[in-house]
Amino acid sequence: MKKNNDFTQEEREILISLEKGEWISDFNKDIKKKYESYARTSISKNKRINIRMSDRDLQKIRVKAMQHGIPYQSLISMLIHKFNEGKIVIK
View (cartoon, rainbow, N blue to C red):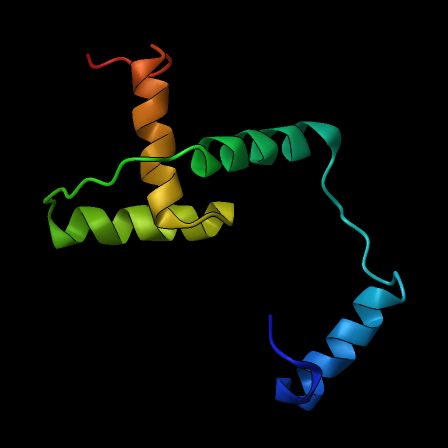
């Protein structure tokens, strides 16, 4: 984390606001549970792979990941995990 003097004025104001408890999550329990599951899946990684894919597919995955507020690598990992668990089926 940055040292206090490394923050911009705007960042310091946000940090002070956060420390005062002025930020409240608007996630309901189901959404929070879903993102906790994503986090657990992304934390338990211990192998690295390289894959080749089209630029178009990668850009679409990045957009979808941003829409869901998660890193695109986590989205790819989650999709692979769901496929392995039988939650995604190839038709």
